[in-house]
Length: 197
Image 1 (tube, rainbow, N blue to C red):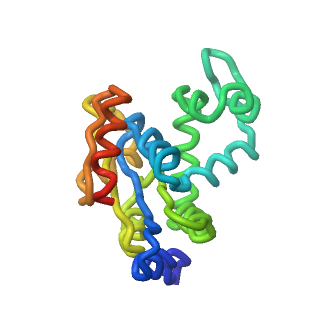
Image 2 (cartoon, rainbow, N blue to C red):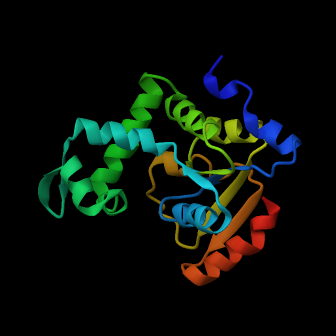
């Protein structure tokens, strides 16, 4: 049986009334998933975990050449210079992560990123927000642990998004929050819906 199917402490913590929660965030690229998670971290004391964190570590360690701004760069040097968020603004970096992540799921283990992220979450005291739920098995694992799924919707989705960005478009969630692009308004929506988690 896969590691993610084993008993997980969030059910026990919830039953004990500790208030510890597990929240999974899903939505298309640039919808505001990381902004939502950062608000939970900064305002409500959550710990951020991402399925893509170990994927980024693998990409960084292999250090392929990527093209950004029309010139070749080593991935590690680019990330060291501008950070992951800015590096992902380059289409080739985003494609690299998407293809590497999908290939590892397809050819090594469909739960490879899920297992690692849930292990990290399990070792964290208190509430956890997972910022990048993209696949049905990830959403199901969060629900199996009495977690809450939150969808972030931005008015202008990318119709050419990679399959991993579209797989959960119709997946049922517990809460949907609309991001209009106004940060102050988005924070108000997050705060207003926080008691529903």
